[in-house]
Image 1 (cartoon, rainbow, N blue to C red):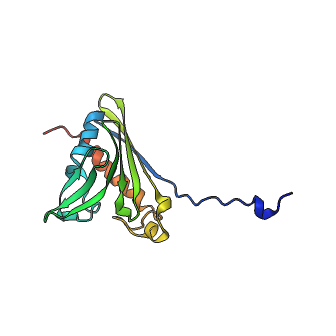
Image 2: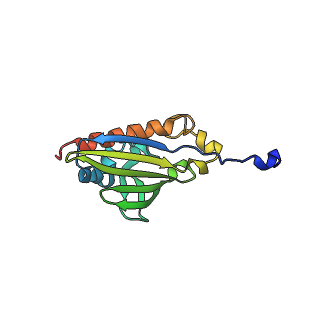
Image 3: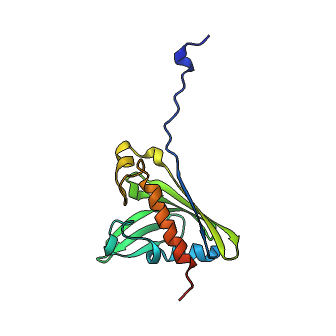
Amino acid sequence: MTAPEEDARVLPLTRPPIRRSVLVRAGRARTWAVFVGRMAEWWPLDPFSAGKARVRDVTVQARVGGTVAEVWDDGTVIPWGEVLTCAEPEHFAMTWNITGTPTEVALRFRAVAPALTKVDLEHTGWDRLDTDELRRDCALPGGYEGGAVATGWDHILAALQRAAAQEDE
């Protein structure tokens, strides 16, 4: 017979990933191109950037090891993360350095119909953040623990949805 201490198992504290999905009324290639190539045009920079009104561009070096960064009107570059996966037009993943300790954001682009794409987002890595980082306000009040990060991704994906669905001008 084993002692109670020997039977006790400690499970690591896990913080679930944030998962969001959106249907975009555009083909997969177009949705990918808008996400990767035109981020500065649709990303809601206020409040979802460090520079807000100062941001003049958001650059995505669409290759593994490339950077995603905001560029301010004075030339200041604020890196958002490093590209981990760039498999056009299916899968894009990057580190997300805005949280302090890097986390990961992955998007999958799935064709549902010729002009309909499902975009699945998964933001992981929350186990690496300390309590202060989890509670710290992000662009919205409440941080991870208060649900602000999930709400933020809802806003960002809705902006992508609108931008990709617009006809080219």
